[in-house]
Length: 530
Image 1 (tube, rainbow, N blue to C red):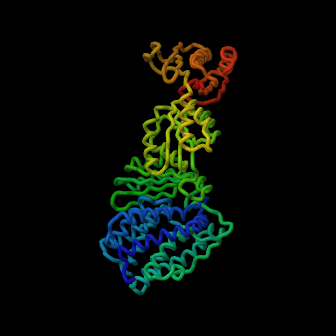
Image 2: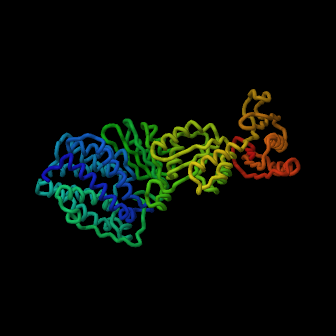
Image 3: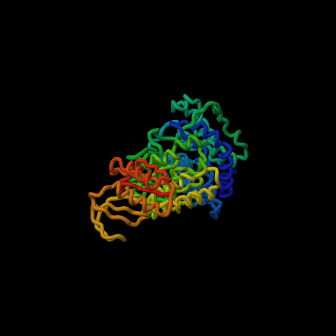
Protein backbone atom coordinates (compact mmCIF):
# COMPACT_ATOMS: atom_id res chain seq x y z
CA UNK A 1 0.00 0.00 0.00
CA UNK A 2 1.49 3.32 -1.11
CA UNK A 3 -0.89 5.59 0.82
CA UNK A 4 -3.36 5.20 3.66
CA UNK A 5 -6.94 6.14 2.69
CA UNK A 6 -10.33 6.09 4.41
CA UNK A 7 -10.98 2.47 3.42
CA UNK A 8 -7.64 1.38 4.88
CA UNK A 9 -8.39 3.25 8.11
CA UNK A 10 -11.64 1.29 8.46
CA UNK A 11 -9.77 -1.94 7.81
CA UNK A 12 -7.19 -1.00 10.43
CA UNK A 13 -9.79 -0.04 13.04
CA UNK A 14 -11.69 -3.29 12.52
CA UNK A 15 -8.48 -5.32 12.68
CA UNK A 16 -7.45 -3.46 15.87
CA UNK A 17 -10.66 -4.45 17.60
CA UNK A 18 -10.16 -8.09 16.59
CA UNK A 19 -6.49 -8.07 17.63
CA UNK A 20 -7.19 -6.42 20.99
CA UNK A 21 -10.02 -8.86 21.62
CA UNK A 22 -7.65 -11.76 20.95
CA UNK A 23 -4.95 -10.28 23.23
CA UNK A 24 -7.20 -8.76 25.92
CA UNK A 25 -6.78 -11.45 28.58
CA UNK A 26 -3.01 -11.61 28.15
CA UNK A 27 -2.70 -7.82 28.41
CA UNK A 28 -4.96 -7.74 31.49
CA UNK A 29 -2.88 -10.46 33.16
CA UNK A 30 0.43 -8.57 32.84
CA UNK A 31 -0.99 -5.28 34.17
CA UNK A 32 1.41 -4.92 37.14
CA UNK A 33 2.11 -1.19 37.42
CA UNK A 34 1.92 -0.48 40.31
CA UNK A 35 -1.06 -1.92 42.33
CA UNK A 36 -3.84 -4.48 41.67
CA UNK A 37 -6.45 -3.82 38.96
CA UNK A 38 -5.81 -5.78 35.75
CA UNK A 39 -7.91 -4.04 33.12
CA UNK A 40 -5.60 -2.39 30.57
CA UNK A 41 -6.46 -4.83 27.80
CA UNK A 42 -10.17 -4.46 28.45
CA UNK A 43 -9.93 -0.67 28.56
CA UNK A 44 -8.06 -0.54 25.27
CA UNK A 45 -10.56 -2.89 23.64
CA UNK A 46 -13.60 -0.92 24.85
CA UNK A 47 -12.04 2.36 23.75
CA UNK A 48 -11.17 1.03 20.30
CA UNK A 49 -14.66 -0.44 19.91
CA UNK A 50 -16.10 2.98 20.66
CA UNK A 51 -13.78 4.50 18.06
CA UNK A 52 -14.79 1.92 15.42
CA UNK A 53 -18.50 2.42 16.16
CA UNK A 54 -18.11 6.18 15.66
CA UNK A 55 -16.28 5.63 12.36
CA UNK A 56 -18.91 3.22 11.06
CA UNK A 57 -21.66 5.74 11.86
CA UNK A 58 -19.86 8.61 10.11
CA UNK A 59 -19.76 9.00 6.31
CA UNK A 60 -16.12 9.74 5.44
CA UNK A 61 -14.15 9.81 2.20
CA UNK A 62 -10.72 11.06 3.31
CA UNK A 63 -8.10 9.67 5.64
CA UNK A 64 -8.31 12.83 7.79
CA UNK A 65 -12.06 12.50 8.25
CA UNK A 66 -11.78 8.80 9.03
CA UNK A 67 -9.07 9.30 11.65
CA UNK A 68 -11.04 12.25 13.07
CA UNK A 69 -14.10 10.05 13.54
CA UNK A 70 -11.96 7.41 15.24
CA UNK A 71 -10.45 10.02 17.56
CA UNK A 72 -13.84 11.45 18.56
CA UNK A 73 -15.27 8.01 19.23
CA UNK A 74 -12.26 7.01 21.29
CA UNK A 75 -12.44 10.19 23.37
CA UNK A 76 -16.15 9.73 24.05
CA UNK A 77 -15.69 6.08 24.98
CA UNK A 78 -12.27 6.19 26.65
CA UNK A 79 -11.80 3.75 29.52
CA UNK A 80 -9.01 4.13 32.05
CA UNK A 81 -5.60 5.73 31.60
CA UNK A 82 -4.82 3.50 28.63
CA UNK A 83 -8.06 4.49 26.88
CA UNK A 84 -7.34 8.18 27.41
CA UNK A 85 -3.85 7.76 25.96
CA UNK A 86 -5.24 5.80 22.98
CA UNK A 87 -7.73 8.60 22.29
CA UNK A 88 -4.87 11.08 22.14
CA UNK A 89 -2.81 8.83 19.86
CA UNK A 90 -5.74 8.73 17.44
CA UNK A 91 -6.24 12.48 17.81
CA UNK A 92 -2.59 13.04 16.93
CA UNK A 93 -2.95 10.91 13.81
CA UNK A 94 -6.11 12.81 12.88
CA UNK A 95 -4.58 16.26 13.39
CA UNK A 96 -1.55 15.43 11.28
CA UNK A 97 -3.79 14.13 8.47
CA UNK A 98 -6.37 16.93 8.74
CA UNK A 99 -7.79 17.76 5.33
CA UNK A 100 -5.73 15.13 3.50
CA UNK A 101 -7.42 12.55 1.30
CA UNK A 102 -4.61 10.04 1.85
CA UNK A 103 -1.55 9.68 4.07
CA UNK A 104 1.90 8.80 2.76
CA UNK A 105 4.94 7.66 4.71
CA UNK A 106 5.93 11.27 5.41
CA UNK A 107 2.44 11.97 6.75
CA UNK A 108 2.56 8.90 9.00
CA UNK A 109 5.91 10.13 10.33
CA UNK A 110 4.34 13.49 11.29
CA UNK A 111 1.25 11.76 12.66
CA UNK A 112 3.18 9.52 15.06
CA UNK A 113 5.18 12.49 16.31
CA UNK A 114 2.02 14.50 16.98
CA UNK A 115 0.45 11.46 18.65
CA UNK A 116 3.45 11.24 20.96
CA UNK A 117 3.14 14.94 21.88
CA UNK A 118 -0.57 14.70 22.73
CA UNK A 119 -0.32 11.38 24.60
CA UNK A 120 2.55 12.66 26.74
CA UNK A 121 0.63 15.85 27.54
CA UNK A 122 -2.38 13.74 28.61
CA UNK A 123 -0.47 12.13 31.50
CA UNK A 124 0.05 14.18 34.64
CA UNK A 125 3.34 12.45 35.57
CA UNK A 126 4.91 10.57 32.63
CA UNK A 127 6.96 7.55 33.74
CA UNK A 128 9.68 5.80 31.68
CA UNK A 129 8.99 2.18 30.88
CA UNK A 130 5.32 2.63 30.03
CA UNK A 131 3.23 2.97 26.89
CA UNK A 132 4.65 6.48 26.44
CA UNK A 133 8.15 5.04 26.06
CA UNK A 134 6.89 2.64 23.40
CA UNK A 135 5.12 5.43 21.52
CA UNK A 136 8.16 7.72 21.68
CA UNK A 137 10.39 4.97 20.29
CA UNK A 138 7.99 4.33 17.40
CA UNK A 139 7.73 8.06 16.63
CA UNK A 140 11.50 8.56 16.72
CA UNK A 141 12.10 5.56 14.47
CA UNK A 142 9.57 6.85 11.97
CA UNK A 143 11.16 10.31 12.10
CA UNK A 144 14.62 8.88 11.44
CA UNK A 145 13.52 6.45 8.73
CA UNK A 146 15.51 7.34 5.54
CA UNK A 147 12.64 6.30 3.28
CA UNK A 148 9.28 8.02 2.72
CA UNK A 149 7.67 4.79 1.54
CA UNK A 150 4.60 4.07 3.69
CA UNK A 151 5.36 0.39 4.22
CA UNK A 152 8.94 1.08 5.30
CA UNK A 153 7.97 3.84 7.73
CA UNK A 154 5.28 1.74 9.42
CA UNK A 155 7.52 -1.35 9.59
CA UNK A 156 10.35 0.61 11.19
CA UNK A 157 7.92 2.21 13.68
CA UNK A 158 6.32 -1.12 14.64
CA UNK A 159 9.70 -2.80 15.09
CA UNK A 160 11.02 0.06 17.26
CA UNK A 161 7.87 -0.04 19.36
CA UNK A 162 8.24 -3.78 19.93
CA UNK A 163 11.90 -3.37 20.92
CA UNK A 164 10.99 -0.56 23.34
CA UNK A 165 8.28 -2.78 24.80
CA UNK A 166 10.82 -5.54 25.47
CA UNK A 167 12.99 -2.92 27.21
CA UNK A 168 10.28 -1.62 29.58
CA UNK A 169 11.30 -3.89 32.52
CA UNK A 170 14.72 -2.20 32.52
CA UNK A 171 13.03 1.12 33.32
CA UNK A 172 10.41 -0.11 35.79
CA UNK A 173 11.58 -2.39 38.59
CA UNK A 174 8.03 -3.62 39.25
CA UNK A 175 7.92 -5.05 35.73
CA UNK A 176 11.30 -6.71 36.14
CA UNK A 177 10.26 -8.34 39.43
CA UNK A 178 7.08 -9.73 37.84
CA UNK A 179 8.89 -10.84 34.69
CA UNK A 180 6.54 -8.96 32.36
CA UNK A 181 6.51 -6.04 29.95
CA UNK A 182 4.28 -2.98 30.31
CA UNK A 183 0.64 -3.82 29.58
CA UNK A 184 -0.25 -0.49 27.95
CA UNK A 185 2.88 -0.66 25.83
CA UNK A 186 1.98 -4.14 24.68
CA UNK A 187 -1.47 -2.92 23.68
CA UNK A 188 0.09 -0.12 21.62
CA UNK A 189 2.41 -2.59 19.89
CA UNK A 190 -0.66 -4.67 18.97
CA UNK A 191 -2.10 -1.56 17.27
CA UNK A 192 1.17 -0.71 15.49
CA UNK A 193 1.60 -4.30 14.33
CA UNK A 194 -1.97 -4.33 13.04
CA UNK A 195 -1.40 -1.10 11.11
CA UNK A 196 1.77 -2.57 9.61
CA UNK A 197 -0.12 -5.73 8.63
CA UNK A 198 -2.85 -3.72 6.88
CA UNK A 199 -0.31 -1.60 4.98
CA UNK A 200 2.19 -4.35 4.05
CA UNK A 201 -0.23 -7.24 3.65
CA UNK A 202 1.99 -9.44 5.81
CA UNK A 203 0.87 -11.29 8.94
CA UNK A 204 1.31 -9.42 12.20
CA UNK A 205 3.85 -11.91 13.57
CA UNK A 206 6.14 -11.29 10.57
CA UNK A 207 6.36 -7.56 11.24
CA UNK A 208 7.72 -7.47 14.78
CA UNK A 209 8.31 -10.66 16.69
CA UNK A 210 9.21 -9.37 20.17
CA UNK A 211 6.18 -10.67 22.08
CA UNK A 212 7.31 -13.18 24.68
CA UNK A 213 5.71 -12.60 28.06
CA UNK A 214 5.66 -15.10 30.96
CA UNK A 215 2.14 -16.41 31.44
CA UNK A 216 2.36 -18.16 34.82
CA UNK A 217 1.91 -16.71 38.33
CA UNK A 218 1.47 -13.12 37.16
CA UNK A 219 0.21 -10.46 39.56
CA UNK A 220 -2.42 -8.19 38.04
CA UNK A 221 -2.42 -4.50 38.90
CA UNK A 222 -4.00 -1.14 38.26
CA UNK A 223 -2.48 0.57 35.27
CA UNK A 224 -1.29 3.69 37.11
CA UNK A 225 -1.52 5.62 40.34
CA UNK A 226 -1.05 5.22 44.06
CA UNK A 227 -2.72 2.41 45.99
CA UNK A 228 -4.08 4.93 48.52
CA UNK A 229 -6.87 5.89 46.11
CA UNK A 230 -9.79 3.49 45.84
CA UNK A 231 -11.82 4.77 42.88
CA UNK A 232 -11.31 5.64 39.24
CA UNK A 233 -13.64 8.46 38.16
CA UNK A 234 -14.15 9.39 34.50
CA UNK A 235 -16.62 11.62 32.73
CA UNK A 236 -17.13 13.61 29.57
CA UNK A 237 -17.17 17.38 29.90
CA UNK A 238 -18.80 19.87 27.54
CA UNK A 239 -17.64 23.48 27.47
CA UNK A 240 -14.45 25.51 27.53
CA UNK A 241 -12.91 24.65 30.90
CA UNK A 242 -9.83 26.18 32.43
CA UNK A 243 -7.88 22.96 31.94
CA UNK A 244 -4.96 23.84 34.22
CA UNK A 245 -7.29 24.89 37.04
CA UNK A 246 -9.35 21.71 36.68
CA UNK A 247 -6.20 19.58 36.70
CA UNK A 248 -4.95 21.35 39.83
CA UNK A 249 -8.27 20.83 41.59
CA UNK A 250 -8.33 17.13 40.71
CA UNK A 251 -4.67 16.69 41.65
CA UNK A 252 -5.51 18.03 45.12
CA UNK A 253 -7.88 15.08 45.73
CA UNK A 254 -6.16 12.29 43.81
CA UNK A 255 -3.68 11.25 41.15
CA UNK A 256 -3.51 9.96 37.56
CA UNK A 257 -5.20 13.19 36.46
CA UNK A 258 -5.86 13.77 32.79
CA UNK A 259 -8.09 16.30 31.05
CA UNK A 260 -7.94 15.85 27.28
CA UNK A 261 -10.12 17.19 24.47
CA UNK A 262 -10.98 16.71 20.84
CA UNK A 263 -10.35 20.32 19.88
CA UNK A 264 -14.08 20.95 19.38
CA UNK A 265 -15.40 21.40 22.93
CA UNK A 266 -15.60 17.80 24.18
CA UNK A 267 -13.26 16.72 26.99
CA UNK A 268 -12.55 13.49 28.82
CA UNK A 269 -11.67 13.80 32.51
CA UNK A 270 -9.90 11.03 34.45
CA UNK A 271 -8.74 10.82 38.07
CA UNK A 272 -8.03 8.23 40.77
CA UNK A 273 -9.39 9.43 44.12
CA UNK A 274 -11.35 8.58 47.26
CA UNK A 275 -13.84 11.48 47.14
CA UNK A 276 -16.07 10.70 44.15
CA UNK A 277 -18.37 13.65 44.77
CA UNK A 278 -15.50 16.14 44.83
CA UNK A 279 -14.21 14.83 41.50
CA UNK A 280 -17.61 15.25 39.84
CA UNK A 281 -18.22 18.65 41.47
CA UNK A 282 -14.93 19.89 40.03
CA UNK A 283 -16.33 19.03 36.61
CA UNK A 284 -19.59 20.82 37.36
CA UNK A 285 -17.67 23.99 38.16
CA UNK A 286 -15.66 23.66 34.94
CA UNK A 287 -18.46 22.81 32.50
CA UNK A 288 -21.20 20.23 32.01
CA UNK A 289 -20.13 16.72 33.01
CA UNK A 290 -22.03 13.72 31.69
CA UNK A 291 -21.61 9.99 31.20
CA UNK A 292 -19.99 9.67 34.62
CA UNK A 293 -18.35 6.31 35.29
CA UNK A 294 -16.88 5.17 38.59
CA UNK A 295 -14.85 2.00 39.12
CA UNK A 296 -13.76 0.65 42.48
CA UNK A 297 -10.37 -0.98 42.08
CA UNK A 298 -11.14 -3.74 44.59
CA UNK A 299 -14.12 -4.81 42.47
CA UNK A 300 -12.00 -4.82 39.31
CA UNK A 301 -9.50 -7.19 40.86
CA UNK A 302 -12.21 -9.72 41.65
CA UNK A 303 -13.89 -9.46 38.29
CA UNK A 304 -10.89 -9.14 35.96
CA UNK A 305 -12.37 -6.16 34.18
CA UNK A 306 -15.75 -6.84 32.60
CA UNK A 307 -17.86 -3.71 32.84
CA UNK A 308 -20.45 -5.39 35.09
CA UNK A 309 -18.79 -7.48 37.78
CA UNK A 310 -22.03 -8.87 39.22
CA UNK A 311 -25.63 -9.30 38.22
CA UNK A 312 -27.37 -7.43 41.07
CA UNK A 313 -26.76 -4.96 43.84
CA UNK A 314 -28.91 -3.23 46.46
CA UNK A 315 -28.14 0.44 47.16
CA UNK A 316 -29.60 1.95 50.33
CA UNK A 317 -29.68 5.69 51.06
CA UNK A 318 -29.87 6.27 54.81
CA UNK A 319 -28.59 8.70 57.43
CA UNK A 320 -27.05 7.48 60.67
CA UNK A 321 -24.00 5.34 61.44
CA UNK A 322 -25.92 2.62 63.23
CA UNK A 323 -28.57 2.06 60.60
CA UNK A 324 -25.94 2.27 57.84
CA UNK A 325 -23.96 -0.53 59.46
CA UNK A 326 -27.18 -2.53 59.82
CA UNK A 327 -27.73 -2.42 56.05
CA UNK A 328 -24.09 -3.14 55.28
CA UNK A 329 -24.24 -6.28 57.41
CA UNK A 330 -27.03 -7.47 55.11
CA UNK A 331 -24.88 -7.01 52.01
CA UNK A 332 -26.26 -3.68 50.78
CA UNK A 333 -24.18 -0.82 49.37
CA UNK A 334 -24.88 2.12 51.68
CA UNK A 335 -24.67 5.82 50.92
CA UNK A 336 -25.20 8.45 53.61
CA UNK A 337 -26.26 11.59 51.70
CA UNK A 338 -25.84 14.10 54.54
CA UNK A 339 -27.35 17.58 54.36
CA UNK A 340 -26.65 18.14 50.66
CA UNK A 341 -27.15 15.36 48.14
CA UNK A 342 -26.62 15.77 44.40
CA UNK A 343 -27.51 13.65 41.40
CA UNK A 344 -23.80 13.31 40.67
CA UNK A 345 -23.16 11.79 44.11
CA UNK A 346 -26.02 9.31 43.71
CA UNK A 347 -25.00 8.42 40.17
CA UNK A 348 -21.47 7.71 41.35
CA UNK A 349 -22.78 5.29 43.99
CA UNK A 350 -25.03 3.44 41.54
CA UNK A 351 -22.32 3.17 38.89
CA UNK A 352 -19.65 2.11 41.41
CA UNK A 353 -21.62 -1.06 42.23
CA UNK A 354 -20.71 -2.25 38.71
CA UNK A 355 -23.86 -4.37 38.81
CA UNK A 356 -26.01 -5.03 35.78
CA UNK A 357 -29.20 -4.60 37.82
CA UNK A 358 -29.39 -2.18 40.76
CA UNK A 359 -32.28 -1.80 43.19
CA UNK A 360 -32.28 1.46 45.16
CA UNK A 361 -33.97 1.80 48.56
CA UNK A 362 -34.15 5.49 49.58
CA UNK A 363 -34.70 6.14 53.26
CA UNK A 364 -36.09 9.66 52.82
CA UNK A 365 -38.54 11.08 50.24
CA UNK A 366 -36.63 14.39 50.04
CA UNK A 367 -33.92 12.65 48.00
CA UNK A 368 -36.30 11.68 45.22
CA UNK A 369 -35.53 14.45 42.72
CA UNK A 370 -31.72 14.02 42.55
CA UNK A 371 -32.21 10.26 42.69
CA UNK A 372 -34.50 10.35 39.64
CA UNK A 373 -31.85 12.32 37.73
CA UNK A 374 -29.13 9.86 38.73
CA UNK A 375 -31.23 6.84 37.75
CA UNK A 376 -32.02 8.37 34.34
CA UNK A 377 -28.32 8.82 33.63
CA UNK A 378 -27.39 5.34 34.88
CA UNK A 379 -30.06 3.72 32.70
CA UNK A 380 -28.88 5.71 29.70
CA UNK A 381 -25.37 4.36 30.36
CA UNK A 382 -26.61 0.76 30.27
CA UNK A 383 -27.50 -0.22 33.83
CA UNK A 384 -30.93 -1.55 34.82
CA UNK A 385 -31.84 0.57 37.85
CA UNK A 386 -35.15 0.40 39.78
CA UNK A 387 -36.14 2.53 42.77
CA UNK A 388 -38.40 0.78 45.28
CA UNK A 389 -40.64 3.37 46.99
CA UNK A 390 -39.42 3.49 50.58
CA UNK A 391 -39.93 6.65 52.62
CA UNK A 392 -38.19 5.57 55.83
CA UNK A 393 -35.25 3.35 56.77
CA UNK A 394 -37.67 0.92 58.44
CA UNK A 395 -39.44 0.42 55.11
CA UNK A 396 -36.06 -0.12 53.45
CA UNK A 397 -35.25 -2.72 56.13
CA UNK A 398 -38.51 -4.52 55.44
CA UNK A 399 -37.78 -4.51 51.71
CA UNK A 400 -34.24 -5.81 52.18
CA UNK A 401 -35.49 -8.57 54.50
CA UNK A 402 -37.40 -10.22 51.64
CA UNK A 403 -34.68 -9.73 49.01
CA UNK A 404 -33.65 -13.02 47.42
CA UNK A 405 -30.93 -13.24 44.75
CA UNK A 406 -32.37 -16.59 43.65
CA UNK A 407 -35.56 -14.94 42.39
CA UNK A 408 -35.89 -13.31 39.01
CA UNK A 409 -34.94 -9.65 39.25
CA UNK A 410 -38.43 -8.40 38.41
CA UNK A 411 -40.11 -10.70 40.92
CA UNK A 412 -37.60 -9.70 43.57
CA UNK A 413 -38.33 -5.99 43.07
CA UNK A 414 -42.07 -6.65 43.34
CA UNK A 415 -41.57 -8.59 46.59
CA UNK A 416 -39.49 -5.78 48.07
CA UNK A 417 -42.01 -3.15 47.02
CA UNK A 418 -44.84 -5.11 48.58
CA UNK A 419 -42.92 -5.54 51.86
CA UNK A 420 -42.14 -1.83 52.00
CA UNK A 421 -45.74 -0.84 51.26
CA UNK A 422 -46.99 -3.17 54.00
CA UNK A 423 -44.78 -1.47 56.60
CA UNK A 424 -46.26 1.50 58.45
CA UNK A 425 -43.70 4.13 59.39
CA UNK A 426 -43.63 6.36 62.42
CA UNK A 427 -41.32 8.81 64.18
CA UNK A 428 -40.84 10.52 67.48
CA UNK A 429 -39.09 13.82 66.82
CA UNK A 430 -38.54 17.27 68.29
CA UNK A 431 -40.25 20.16 66.51
CA UNK A 432 -37.79 22.73 65.15
CA UNK A 433 -40.38 25.42 64.37
CA UNK A 434 -43.92 26.61 65.00
CA UNK A 435 -46.48 25.06 62.65
CA UNK A 436 -50.12 24.06 62.24
CA UNK A 437 -50.67 20.31 62.09
CA UNK A 438 -53.74 18.08 61.77
CA UNK A 439 -53.89 17.80 65.56
CA UNK A 440 -53.17 21.40 66.44
CA UNK A 441 -50.36 23.93 66.75
CA UNK A 442 -46.84 22.79 67.63
CA UNK A 443 -44.04 25.00 68.90
CA UNK A 444 -40.27 24.69 68.78
CA UNK A 445 -39.13 22.02 71.24
CA UNK A 446 -42.43 20.12 71.35
CA UNK A 447 -42.35 16.34 71.01
CA UNK A 448 -44.11 15.08 67.89
CA UNK A 449 -45.44 11.62 67.19
CA UNK A 450 -45.84 11.04 63.43
CA UNK A 451 -47.36 8.22 61.38
CA UNK A 452 -46.69 8.01 57.64
CA UNK A 453 -45.41 11.59 57.60
CA UNK A 454 -48.35 13.19 59.44
CA UNK A 455 -48.28 14.52 63.00
CA UNK A 456 -50.76 12.56 65.14
CA UNK A 457 -49.56 13.38 68.68
CA UNK A 458 -48.10 16.58 70.18
CA UNK A 459 -46.58 16.67 73.66
CA UNK A 460 -44.74 19.47 75.48
CA UNK A 461 -40.97 19.48 75.48
CA UNK A 462 -40.74 18.06 79.02
CA UNK A 463 -43.04 15.09 78.31
CA UNK A 464 -41.84 11.51 78.69
CA UNK A 465 -40.43 10.22 75.38
CA UNK A 466 -41.03 6.61 76.36
CA UNK A 467 -44.71 7.25 77.11
CA UNK A 468 -45.14 9.08 73.81
CA UNK A 469 -43.45 6.19 71.98
CA UNK A 470 -45.85 3.73 73.59
CA UNK A 471 -48.88 5.81 72.52
CA UNK A 472 -47.53 6.06 69.00
CA UNK A 473 -46.92 2.31 68.72
CA UNK A 474 -50.41 1.56 70.11
CA UNK A 475 -51.89 3.76 67.40
CA UNK A 476 -49.83 2.09 64.69
CA UNK A 477 -50.82 -1.39 65.92
CA UNK A 478 -54.53 -0.53 65.92
CA UNK A 479 -54.82 -1.97 62.41
CA UNK A 480 -52.71 -5.02 63.25
CA UNK A 481 -49.06 -5.99 63.14
CA UNK A 482 -46.63 -8.70 64.17
CA UNK A 483 -43.26 -6.95 64.29
CA UNK A 484 -42.27 -3.52 65.62
CA UNK A 485 -38.84 -2.26 64.54
CA UNK A 486 -37.32 0.73 66.34
CA UNK A 487 -34.23 2.68 65.30
CA UNK A 488 -32.81 4.75 68.15
CA UNK A 489 -31.60 8.23 67.18
CA UNK A 490 -28.55 9.99 68.55
CA UNK A 491 -30.61 11.91 71.11
CA UNK A 492 -32.91 9.04 72.14
CA UNK A 493 -33.20 8.80 75.95
CA UNK A 494 -31.42 5.88 77.57
CA UNK A 495 -33.70 2.92 78.24
CA UNK A 496 -36.53 3.99 75.94
CA UNK A 497 -36.40 0.63 74.14
CA UNK A 498 -36.91 -1.18 77.48
CA UNK A 499 -39.96 0.97 78.17
CA UNK A 500 -41.41 -0.05 74.83
CA UNK A 501 -40.55 -3.69 75.42
CA UNK A 502 -42.29 -3.73 78.80
CA UNK A 503 -45.33 -1.99 77.34
CA UNK A 504 -45.66 -4.36 74.41
CA UNK A 505 -45.27 -7.41 76.64
CA UNK A 506 -48.43 -6.33 78.48
CA UNK A 507 -50.49 -4.52 75.82
CA UNK A 508 -49.53 -6.59 72.75
CA UNK A 509 -47.94 -9.85 73.83
CA UNK A 510 -48.27 -11.28 70.31
CA UNK A 511 -45.99 -8.58 68.85
CA UNK A 512 -42.21 -8.92 68.57
CA UNK A 513 -39.92 -5.91 69.14
CA UNK A 514 -36.58 -5.38 67.40
CA UNK A 515 -34.59 -2.30 68.48
CA UNK A 516 -31.31 -1.12 66.97
CA UNK A 517 -29.02 1.90 67.44
CA UNK A 518 -29.74 4.02 64.37
CA UNK A 519 -27.73 7.15 64.96
CA UNK A 520 -30.06 9.40 62.95
CA UNK A 521 -29.96 13.10 63.79
CA UNK A 522 -33.48 14.26 62.97
CA UNK A 523 -35.59 11.73 64.87
CA UNK A 524 -35.41 10.43 68.41
CA UNK A 525 -37.04 7.20 67.27
CA UNK A 526 -37.97 5.75 63.90
CA UNK A 527 -40.65 3.08 64.17
CA UNK A 528 -41.83 0.50 61.69
CA UNK A 529 -44.79 -1.89 62.05
CA UNK A 530 -45.11 -4.97 59.87
